[in-house]
Image (cartoon, rainbow, N blue to C red; front, side):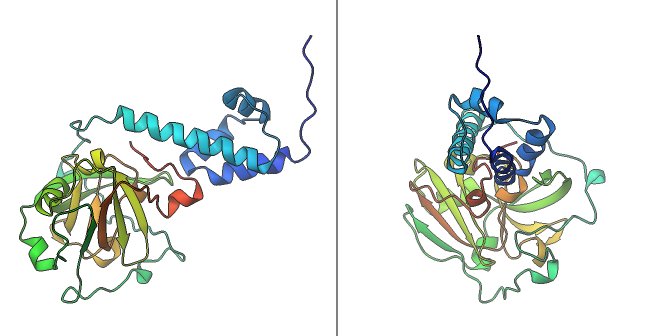
Length: 259
């Protein structure tokens, strides 16, 4: 004979808070399937009876998602590329700051800009835009997928990130690459994704210079991950073994966020 459990009086608040903390794609699935406390208990093997329990459960699920996505990553599997006829124009603007306006994008003088390289590298010399632009470049037409539910195809030109890492003598056995940006955004990626052949330090966009609203003078283009893992206005790249997370990751977004 089964015993019917009495719902926790704050269960509604707990579930709404849980839905708020997970990333938007997971949130839609969360709401669509109307998960209740019973389903969460079944998934985690423990009763979710307070906010701390819900937070711990969501953290475990997120960590599990990250491990599975990292395990599934094929370092040589390429994201689809498209013909120029499919490029999205105008390409949407999006940001982590509010109001979500291109007018808020930082104005950076290319003559004063320097890229700092820190951590587990042999050469920590700063890079000027001129020096960076002298490295071999390639162009890709790939799809940018935003966690908010929209996508757009763009043409990106820049340096293969694996070439840059080798140029600075980065420890390719390090675990993480962290990006700190001049708009105060921060995110990090795993080394396997950093070495993927389509991961790019982007200098050009749609046949011209990378626009200010899309990350001038330097952004990361990584078409195997969601858009928020593509930082703009990069000012520092750090190689290391210490997990540094990122801006949206502190709000519960999955760190790996692969496609």
